[in-house]
Structures are given as C-alpha cells and as structure tokens.
Image 1 (tube, rainbow, N blue to C red):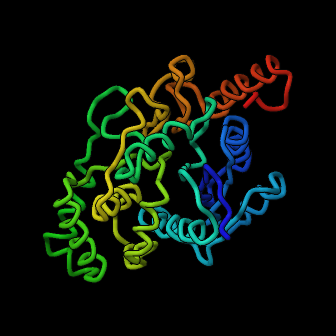
Image 2: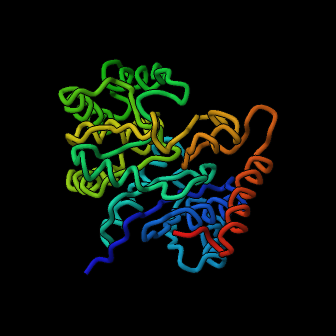
Length: 299
C-alpha cells in the first residue's frame, strides 16, 4: 500500500547549489508546513550534495540522477524522474516543486493549493500565474518565440522527434485554451496528483527527446498540463505565492507583512544579498519560537 502525505515537496539540486541555503530552505518547510509532509531532494549535482543534506535531515529522501541532466528541459527530465518515483510510492493532496532559492515564510503554505485542487479538480498546476507580483502580465515573448521556432520553421528538422511531439502537444493545448508561451512560474509551484498521473499515463514523465529542447522546464510543464486537459491555476493574486525570476518581487518586510508564504528568489532584493534576506526570515522563525516556547511554531 502506498503511503499518504498531504504534502510532497520536491527540490532539485544542481552543482552550484549552496548546502547552507538548501538546509535553510528545508528548515523553513519543516517549520511552517501544517500537514503531513515528505521532502524529496533530486540530486543532479554529481557531487553528493543530497547525501550531505540527508545526514542533517535523516527523513529527507534523496534521488540521484545517473548522469548530469543540466538546466532548461534537462531539468524537466530530472523532475519527471522524481515525480514518477513519487507517484510509484505515495499518494498526496499536493506536490510543491521548489528551487533551492525559494523559501517558506508563513504557516500552512500548502493549504491554499490543497483547497484549490479539492474545489477545482480540473486545475493541475498552480502558482504565480497569470500575472506577476505587481499585477502585470508576464512577458511570454521568449517562450512564445521558441515554441513557434521549434514547431513552424526549419528548426523543426534539427530534432524531429522532440519537435514533432512538441507540435502535437501544442495543438492539443491550443484546443484547450492555451496561450502560446504562457506558464505557471516554476521556481515554486504546485501540482495535483491527478494531473501528474495523467501526464505519466501519456508517457511524458519524462519524454526523453525533450531534454535538448531550448525551453525552460516550467514552460514545457505548463504546455503539457494544458495538453492533458488540466488547467493552470492562480495562487498569487491574494494567495500565498510571491515569485519573481531574478531576486525577490518585493522587500522582505513587505512580503512578511502581506502574509505571503512561498517566495522566490532569495538571491537578492535591490542591494540586499541572499545571506541578509535569509537571516531576516530566519529571525522571524526565531521570534515565533520565542512566542510559542517550542522548537517549531505551534501547528
């Protein structure tokens, strides 16, 4: 019988990931999650970083890639292998995919996603979508241009298997209301179990010829989700997610005061660097410890 966790968290590790930052992100999950939670590290570092984290956090599961998959759609393959293993072992209400420069900063970050998937089971992937933190539309010109190049121009013949499959998925997604190039931002986003099982059933966890397609993995996953008949969902407008591609979308103080719970990226905010940003949010956890008198905030 498969074990049930309300929340599964999958975090990919690359060769440049900083162990101290990975540990801080894991601690933030353990501190704030209010549901039964299991963390899976997908180690593509080829440096044993996952095992080092497991020595600190013994309950964390580590999946090691046999060879380096890299970024872009190589990361799609890495994540797909992890998702497939998760599906083989567990049932869950929601799966949170996080980068190592994402952070949990508020209690029960999973609650809104679980509620969304329960009330709207047609939604399969949700997060920062369709607008950025400031309420402006994402600039989708690059993924849109890439999609058109790989499906409608001479570049199609460079990787015919991958680009033919991409064309098929694109046509199906368009029939389901997909706007070419749109995506849920992948640095921190949720998937439903039903959606991932549908993707797996279609042989897309992974479809290995996609490895060398020049798209970001969240662009590809969003396309696949729409092609399978699921919808993309909003957890940002009035919700817990606050993400930007480079750096934070707002000052740490503002994100804390607005009650945001899942943020990306901790790399910087204006002149403030990652160590300072992480220290700010770590101090918030310390303050809660002082109030509750416990190792973790009360559930």
